[in-house]
Length: 253
Image (cartoon, rainbow, N blue to C red; front, side, top):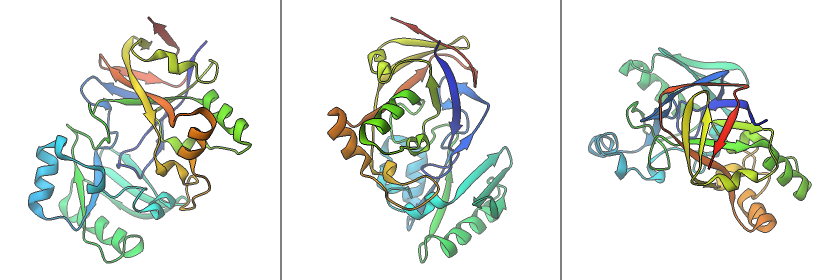
């Protein structure tokens, strides 16, 4: 039986990674509150306005990410409906209301002081069109934990599942069996998801979780081991609903 093992969402693009017992699924936006915030640096007002008003104009290098600022991996953000908390090893650095402009400025100043020195930061929010690397922007990521285990075994190296920053981790099926699901529909708690594509992996996965240390060239190892650089699938939800740990997955041809 295939079941959900872990659920995560990342309120801030490329930085935060929060585990949850359940996730709200929105047909037009994917996981609710996933990647609804982002940081940019040294960007003028007109460019920022364009990023918000025209999501298709967004490029990865417009944003602060783990690829260009790996030190951010040592920090985490937790988010509730009116509070965003920056922590490092469970120590609270700053807590703000992300909808208050003055407090957003304080957050940017704090990050400029301790992480991204001598850069002018802006903190963006877009709940309607979250800051995803992929289009459509309602995609949800899923990974089979057995595939990670198989990869770890084959290269004789422990690969932490958190490196991949997926929304849904599942178990109960053979390694890499999920690669046969492209184009199929899966059902979780009466929500249908179309499996749209595999996820090709980038250099952000080279970072050991909660550190800025590069411990492996993960895409290179995937290519060497399997002749591809994929780990996981993109799902596109067809209805609104809620999914939870322990929910069963049903696969339809």
